[in-house]
Image (cartoon, rainbow, N blue to C red; front, side, top):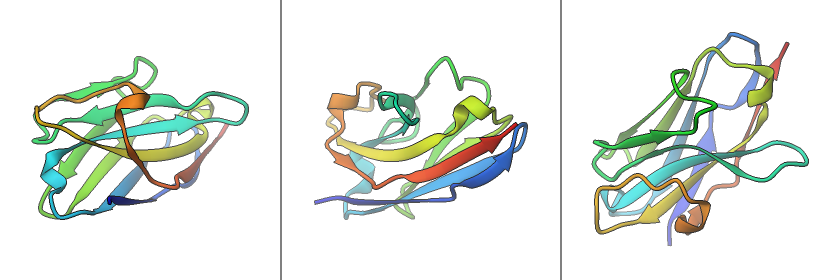
Length: 126
């Protein structure tokens, strides 16, 4: 069983930055690709970013490419989402997800992720 706990959300003005963290309680964190998804009110949960087991491969949605970065520290069992140049449309609950993999791929499909955190709210004011 993998438990994921997100932190770092909050209220920020447009153009500002936030750094989300996701701490995983698992012994083999380096066996998991990690992803970030978000869900705005009344909308489907959507892919934001993913990082492979080693951190070598990353993937971003078009809406955040160039503004967000994803990284991981396998020694700390933690994945990060650095969000810069935030826009009001980035407002959502952000979820961390884990996918056990036998390869070094960063998956974007929601159904590939089995373990999910409870989410952290990010609100960007205009």
